[in-house]
Length: 353
Ligand SMILES: Nc1ncnc2c1ncn2[C@@H]1O[C@H](COP(=O)(O)OP(=O)(O)O)[C@@H](O)[C@H]1O
Ligand SMILES: [Mg+2]
Image: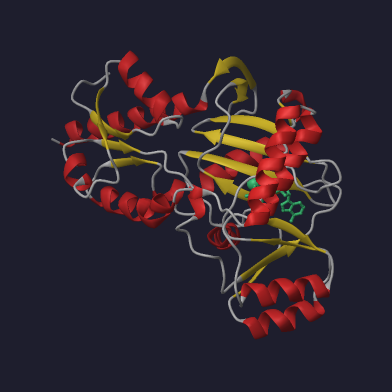
């Protein structure tokens, strides 16, 4: 490893930084731990070649400034993970709608309205069912099927009235109930009881206490029927990791079901190729994308995210779409690629001198 290269890492326990810090220690990398929330963060980073921060969608603070900090640091000539292309659309389905359309990425037809009258007119002539979503959310928490005009009208009135909380506490309780049904463990039943009571008495999760209600827009998209799973493709550099996530029982939503298939033989080559293409078009260091299939069996991107929960895979597909059998951790590939990219920059600096 080039000893002159120095990187800064924001440490958050149980996040990607655990892997990054271990990797730096094991590979004798010159690194320092920084705190992105400190006011002097720019000064702290100014003697570094790179900055890595696994910022999170549930953090009010991260949502407030992570994108802006990334852009500012990039302007200093310091390499960032996740960089601007990788992260500007994170947890933002509105941004992703425009991104997919602008880059010609196969997506699901999506409609967004910022004016109540236009939304009301549109729902009178729409074809149902539709899928309603908030711009942010995970585990299907903010994703609902809209069966008819009456339900759509209710959502439009709410979107342009009191709005929606960033986390639906009843959905959290139903998720806990689903986990009990799936696992049949008494502890999960207790968990459901806990979240259900919290929902009834109106106790909100700490993570949402500062976040604003979602209002002033409505996001709806065509419903893709007969999908009993979605395919989550994760592309880190030149590797594609795959997970098939089965839908919950009697539900069209796979995200958050916790029922996963890793057998690489089930993934269509077309989906793997699409995953690489999407990563290339957007120019990402790391991207997880959820694919569902249209009536012709063609994959369509539902949403993208630079981070994800799985950290162990039994292999990946390379860019030739060949399976590489190896027990691997994508989070380690992130830092390996990151260091290699910085070294490349160093090489150019030296070459120019
Ligand atoms: N338009 C759609 N048609 C059919 N299924 C969908 C559609 N949009 C989402 N889904 C299903 O719902 C799940 C959650 O949707 P997604 O937009 O990925 O939300 P989240 O951010 O909560 O993961 C997906 O994993 C997929 O199974
Ligand atoms: Mg999803």
